[in-house]
Image (cartoon, rainbow, N blue to C red):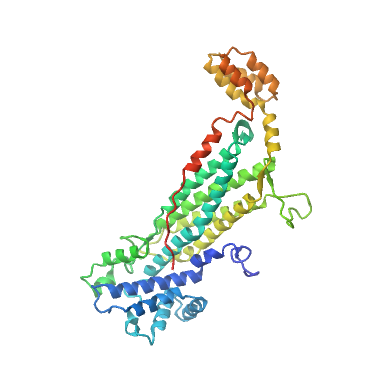
Length: 465
């Protein structure tokens, strides 16, 4: 962390986002570029269509892959030093690998490094792996952890009655657990889509036509070689591109994650409101200050922090999704700078998830407040009464209940008196007389099982390099 960092992700939030640096930093980009270059060289050595590249021994293959496995800050710094001369980030990686192969048994194969490749052949595959690993190995586990936490709360509070509010006004009662389960169900649907995202890649030369490849080896089945290589990396092969992979899958990824973020913003705001209504209490953390002037305050800062960071994330994700699929003719450079912000978008979402989890860990329900609001809202039984009146054939039941309840307070006694005055089947009348706002929750408790049983299947992701 630097106290002089311009970005809060590199300053204030540097520690919380540290796991993402292995997949979204400049360090990570260099490492993944080396990974692609190394694997392409190994693939050439294993191809029967390119006899000029001899087969590598097991120690030689290990030597190459150790450039990735043992990649460290010193290696990254050396690449950046080379870039000061080349003024080209991908060419610097190529020169670094060649430098590392000097005075080794692979010295005779140095000029096969980066063979027939344009920079984007390396870049698009590196970014695809970075995005895939960053999501599957860092972001998704934390998202699942948050959803599982809320799911456990939903199960625990499934039967706790709560006055619902539509348009901010008292409405038919629900349960705390069911309202939490709604979010669990929404999140899980998005997680299933995120888990099934495709990460595309290509390796087909300067404008996507295998021009140089075919010039050197006209009889080689280059599309098949490229497909085998891309799929061997754990990616989906894109067979038709310009110089760049078209980035449509990145847009799909950004849209999917932004939907999850948006649901979290909705959740943060609802919890914030429940706290303000007294339905939830927050555990006091020793030494924590809620206000610089009002010592009594315990502010819902974690949910506010989450909301702010999720919205920052979405602003970037929406821009990335709208910008990246657009490139003039066979390519322009605007995607290069734009792609470097993928980590920023995911960083803000990652910080937000941690804030929501921290806030959830300090929450408890306030039964007294929940009960008090229910006891003051007997008018919400009007829905049940007028519905049973319809069943019994009463004329204008809605209007009669509206006249009794709309805009006026009504007690349990007056509600029971009204029910007793109605001509209703004895069973229905008795059921209404026994009903209270706290018991009028419909099937809310049972509906929690919809979210609990609708488990999203986790898929083992690419393990990174």
